[in-house]
Length: 603
Image (cartoon, rainbow, N blue to C red):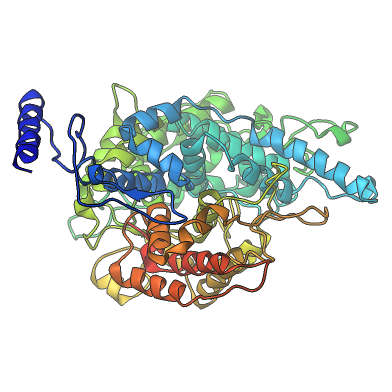
């Protein structure tokens, strides 16, 4: 024994002198070391075994794995354990860089159209009249969205696109609901620009006909005073308030500037809105839908007849002429074309000193935490303002958000300002992506309507341009006294909270519930598949530990863990051959974990 111990110490001395390791014996570096023990254990029906070498080779130390799990919870819609393990083996920056190189396998627009055609064929094969089939509405965009987000590789791009969709909002919960192709094309604009430049994204959003219809600058006319016609001010207001500079002047760290009396300083007033409204005049349809080719393309043509996937074009006769007085004394000169006016106005807002901190804080809140420190916001704002001479570089901004010490350091987890509530639809995406699916045909269509009715959330389905919740929402006096925001709590109420519990109970009911489903096509839905997890259900603590790695990122409290273990241990039989004891043990563990604060609050 003495000789063996001396051998280990000699090996340690060699390792330490050869390389400057920052970890220690027990976390790896066991090459050339032999460990003997009085016994090694294997258990019936388990693949794993307790081997002596595991005491020093790092097996079972999950620190890097759990760090990767938390990172991916911020950067994706959820991944399985094998993917988490692969990411844990590389620097997170390398993973981000690789994600920047991945393009989507197909456009959401093309997939929406193809799914619609396939659905129509299925409907006809079931005896339906194809002439009576649905129009290509929001439902087919939803089918395509879900199909795009199961088994895909463009994980970060899709996550950023959804985050942008909650800042640059359009919604099917409006007169856009019938235009699935338009919704899909708008989502493609967000997705395609997710790793581009924010200025380009702002321009494409401005010219998109779905935004034009939603915020009423489609067919927005110049002033005709004798007919009491004036430019619509809606988009002019929202591009400032919600898409770029916000209501009040900001410091680089996101705090409000104040005047001599300690009051916030407005960034614009009603006169500024009127001037900006003049900019966004003259935009109209760029094309006509195929079924209406007998119509003439013109300014004023109803959006029903117009193409929803072609950027609006300028009709100069309907663009407000003359100079426009914008913010901080900036003047757009007389005599320019309408598109020149729009470019100048977008550049003006893009370069405003508020835009960096405004967008930085919104994206941090979407991805990482509701109450970023002033330093965190300032660092990301600085990245937005200038990265190697470029302003608005989204790749740099994304890296700055996800790799910042405040996002990555475990020391922040216990800070009361840390964390955010995971919004309900993200929890839905998590369970579908992180648990196996019982699906044989590779068709992952889902309209998500049951979940939407219960929680009010689905992609591109916000109730207004102000998104599902306000970024500075304060739910009660405790938050107010602590000077904390909790945006997602705005949609967490007595109805949606209970409905979420019911949804989780249904998802985990392996006998009858499907997590993905369609309407009117007589297609089988897709339920969760518990087979892989049932292996771990032989031991309640092993099962809970496995789920902790995937869902709660190693942050499951001892108290919550014990509650779940006790509940699982209490299940001693199944519901017959169809639903076994292990099915019910997995259901109970997954249900209790997904409704726990340990999961719902992302830290």
